[in-house]
Length: 409
Image (spheres, helix red, strand yellow):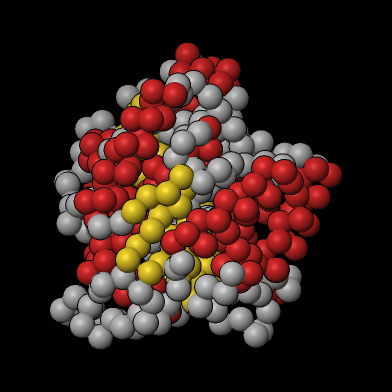
């Protein structure tokens, strides 16, 4: 039984939203939870710039208070989500080792690339008894479309780091079967390492309760970091084409410019706004009002772990158009709660969106099916049960009544 756990994350803003319920359930089982994340500097924001020290301090204070309310303790570590600076990454590794020596955890739970790699290495060196790693997606190193030789070099390095880190884990969790299969085929995940597939991060079905969609006028929504591999350009092109024939249709976009090499340029975003193709909502602290105002949720991503925004849209009762790509395809039953389209295929994306314009009744029909699918597969309590079970935490009395605990595939 784990008594003291260190959770390592790279993106502070996602911790409470993505892992809050998991932390709550760990604490309820008597586990002392410590969370390490880059809350004090540029790596805490995920932005390319523009946030001052006062803003970062305020964000850090809010996160600290939120985690304390859940019963967890927050620790600041130096960690940059993007880039492969050896000295900076060595600093992250050393900081994690120092923190582990101070906290003395007997369990590790790390997710996203750098926390997985450096968290696993630090925990292995220091003999942390139980090490669980969650691969939430493959990131730019695997999916980015820009960079040529540089990207190939980064991909090779990330593969090597992953192989070393995952080989030191007691359990590796994946959010879709395609990622797990790829890791096995490329020799990143060894046969000697236990692994399972879980249904994403789950979604709080009470917090994201269904709202009837509006169809007058029909409106589409995409929420994502503004990256090329999220399909943002394809979405903007589809908006341009469809609005030429149906100017009343709204295409809304929420998210932020990132310092990822695959990021959309600011001038590119401004062109879409100036041309009237896109209504830009900026970065949202609460996505529920935006989803509630849309008719259909769209995510033309090239690859995901399991897209959280799609799960949130499904929980609110929205039809979904996404790609037939790893992580995305699991969320949609074609013709039941939405449509799947080929990656990078704007023609196919337009055709799928056009169906909702031609038959608005599908918006309600598919939206109801999305909510049912979210309840069946993506309830956060189901997903957390599978994570805790994989970690060896006793979950005999933790699965909510009426829920099948065997959600691990």
